Length: 276
Length: 262
Picture 1 (spheres, rainbow over the protein chains, first blue to last red):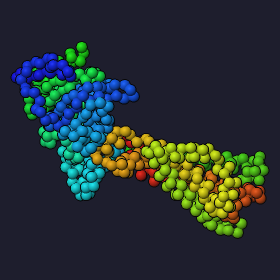
Picture 2 (cartoon, rainbow over the protein chains, first blue to last red):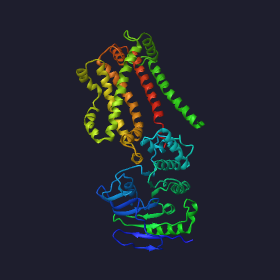
Picture 3 (cartoon, rainbow over the protein chains, first blue to last red):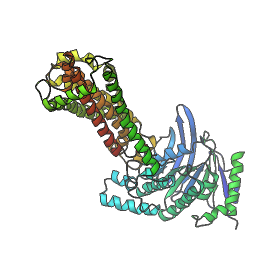
């Protein structure tokens, strides 16, 4: 009952510093998502520079850090909402040029279209792609069922609770069948119970769809519970950040892991790291 | 609906009815006292008599429905054309900086000019017929709707735009499904404001001459000191304003069903 927790401190242009309990092999050569020395400046201010990483297909990487550390900027760069001011960001070895349905985003405040029903929100990407009405309806019903919203297809977002709104946000991204799901602190405004249920939902959906997920959070618990790997971000101006591999028992999508000694140990370790 | 909400609704209705009734009461009281001469402020009874007379026999030999119809036609066509064009230009100005640059100086230069000040020019350019009257109302509706639609299109949330783009929406789809619905609450408010203003300009526009229309009735009656008919005309315009405003508000509530619910 001793999960292997490996910690690699990655500092560009420097060798790997710390390596605790080195079991796993290094990442396979073909990442689905890749940053090569990416930098971003805004209003003449450097938000990040020289950031490099690779994310494998099917991986769930949690970007953990305090507000202002640049974690949302990474997400916006992957989404194509922002363009790097230096370096290159790749998806499937193609340079990211702008937003596209292969990278779906779940927003912190859901960002649903209040003027559309739940079904129309969910099937919006199909509408944009010119798919026929019957298909849209069918996909909306399937996705609503997948996120536990069956029976709410004809409701409007303002008639739903915060947790249900985020379920719609999740479903509309899934309907577009993205390669990567980008989640920007999607559950931070929800109460603890709802948040935990939805975290388990994310893991369940990942098991079903095999989707690659980049998850931005400022909650240590959330990062440890969800992530295969955690990027521990404090200041990205020199491109350095710590990286931790999480190895908790499978299936992950059960609340039991929250009580696992490995979960608690990792949480404590990150807490001390971030404090210091 | 629960009983508290029902009670609140009844109280609202009671106040909405009580307020005009008390004005009427005050009016009756002042005129019965004889404190003001009837040519300045006629009694409600005298106004009602003229009102009924106008409904039955028309004014200056023309049926009242012809007067009402002439006014509604002018306001109606100017309102429809002005708001359609104003909304289109306003939305474009909100989303395309080049379009905004084209319109900003001319529209902001014209907007503060009172329509009355434009009447001499409009007579010179378009004569004293229907065209002048309609164009004067059209212009004021256009300017109001442009401002509202532009502000509305800018009220669109950044996350909503980004969400649409990341789900594959092109420029037109983003506009049609996100920008336009986001702007609708403000557009609806603009329609109510511009309808009110349109009716105001109507009276001014009928200064331009002609022999029909509610504005004509009011102006003609006032120049002959037929004060009761002035009041009757004013009340008719007021009623049209009240009905059209409630109508637009009713439609707005159904179109923009999500407003204020989050």
